Length: 355
Image 1: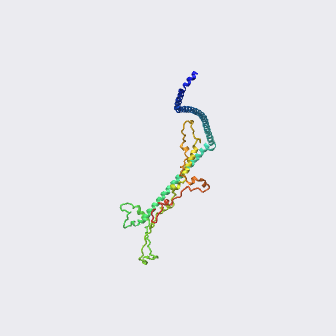
Image 2: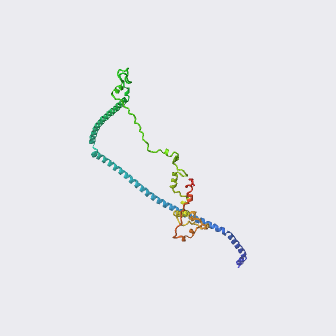
Image 3: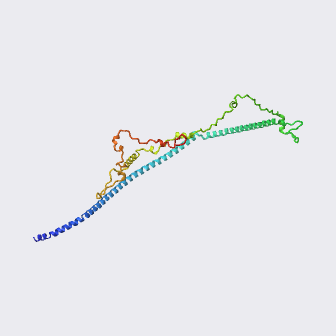
């Protein structure tokens, strides 16, 4: 009973201590919670990193074994291929040598007999000597004929000259030019002048006057004016023919508007999407191991963005209501040429100037 009485007296003190300790616990609850969360995150991070390290080591070991196996198999295959090639080269070389020896023996035995070829060469040498002798005789005969023709030509020219100079022949009363009194014998030309006859010079035929049949128009139309000469270049504002031909047959020069499609931007975006989908390794996004971080994971830009224009206020009718366009003729994707700008600087005005 005394003890119970003592406890009743200490009830207020106990309540006060209880409230004080609860207040202190409430003040330190957030710090302790953050500390516990930090310890748990550190422990789980260490655990995950250890597990990842273990997986990396095992993956490295598997890759090393597999690469070693494939490399040894590839090296063995290359060694076998090199040995086969070396063996085939050796066999080909030996086969060529055997064929060479056999063909040499066969040719020496049956095709090119040494003694028969020696007799053939001796006969060929004798025939060559006879032919060379005949050719030399024929060449000498031709040389003599050419000399004889030359002498005859010179003799003919001298006779023609003597015929033209026959008036210089000497007479008994008057010695000629080629018969000098200071010489014992007359000149060769003097003897030639005595043998030939004088050259008769024929007079040129006289022109006969024939009456002209064409009428004299000057007497008929004395006051007629002469026409101006015809020039090669026509009169007037005309361009050269070569320049006009080049203008008519000039090649097509499409502008940027003509060659670019109006849907080129959408097609480029679709191509980027297809290329990103081909190069993507995994379709699921990466999630972190720990949930302690309240920050949301942000994906990569090239995997999250749709590569499209902003939909609000920028989409057209054909993009929003595609179901209405099914089965209809597609829109024209290429602009037509602008005739005004295509003809600029390539046409000519009435005055012949470039527009």
